[in-house]
Length: 323
Length: 276
Image (cartoon, rainbow over all chains, first blue to last red; front, side, top):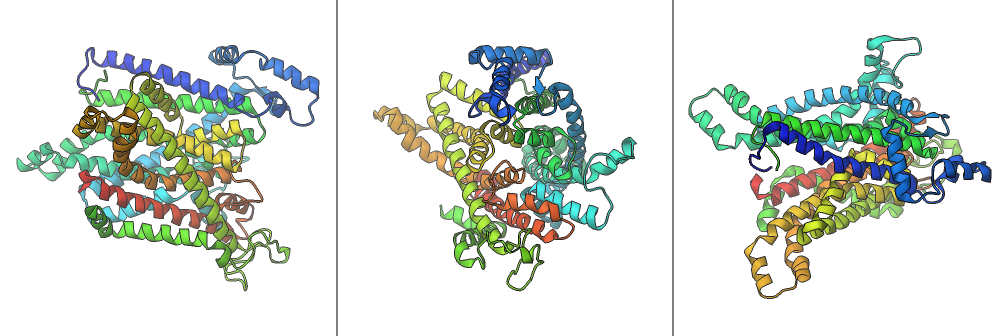
């Protein structure tokens, strides 16, 4: 975090945007490598044991596997840039529309989970810091360390047992009822998965929010604000929270990554028709193009989220302009 | 050092964590002697027996295998796999951080940009992507989770190295003609020890959860071997009739991870002077 650099916000935004380029390049190389690190001939693995030699050779050529790696990479990235993520052999369809459709469901789930995480996590973290060492602080931090230690896939199963199988309040799986429709139906299906994914994140968020608020509370200017007779409420609102917002935004960015990753497990538990559950099946079916498409889409989303987080950071704190 | 021990001992949460970890470790080591049955012995006459069944204190699974024995043997796998993956990540990450911080220049640039790329992936997604490339399996799962955590250690060690390099005693050692390699291995590395130890304790819980998660998805430990994650996956078919088969492995994961997290929090508070 360097001191003021020249050029102000637009110049900073441009520099930050340029910094994302090598990262996206690295991401694309790693996603490309998914197919090529695989032991054996990917074409033979993708087609399975029943495939004839001619079929394997044809796919081998179609995938361009007979070309040098560098050529293969540029051919692939050129196709990706044109929106062509290849074809899924088991599905018999193009990958792009398939992953986009699934990605919508993943976004619904992560948005729901993030709302729960922010609501619970921020409130618990701020209250804990402001009332440090009170019973409220001890209680919420105890709950938080429990929440951080709970595996999401197990929490999900327990919620299914209690709230779906025993009490029958919510459905155990899927995103919509066979004959149901509308936003209400989706929200009803969303409750358990979003709570599952959101609580783990809320716990982490509460712990980090507490420590960043505590760090600010210990600053000299907060002591001065108190010394000049400002009401505690005003000190917290005007001096503490305003300055604690940046570390909290950073943590939120990290949590989006956690949620997008954790969605893979949550979607599998609840048979949520998202990208994560699709990718797990695609890995078992050795459907490389589908896995690559899914990974690329999620990772790119995360890079964009991080970019947005850094820009927000700079908007909220004019001191920050990276060199 | 006595200060560290004193602060650590004052925290009841940290001591509780240490206790949990110790109990789990003992149970894992003594599993062959403590387990009442062979964990793989199938008894189809006693499928999905409930808790407190005669001869099976925690009941049986869908093949009539004794759950207590399976949980004890599962502890060995889950702990061993988690510790190995953490050690792999800590060694590889520390080496990267040491190289980047000590050599600097293009080496630093190359390593840090690679670390940025790894961090551009959501945590669990990267592990899944690596498994997609290498294929499902126990060893590949450990490698995947270790690679994902390299940035965590790399950044901690690099920051420590950069700070230590500026200190006077390293300057004077250099003036005395101590070789760069020896400097890196003795003075610099030694100073990285405390932050790395804290990082390892804070990291093990997440590693165990991640590996259990991979096994749960069928991407980690493969049958007939089973860890807590794969036990949980198998139990999903019988949630209506035998919820305890699903509950128990999760409780085992939770208690172990909670133990490491509390222990890690306590160690961090004790070793980080800013928090005193």
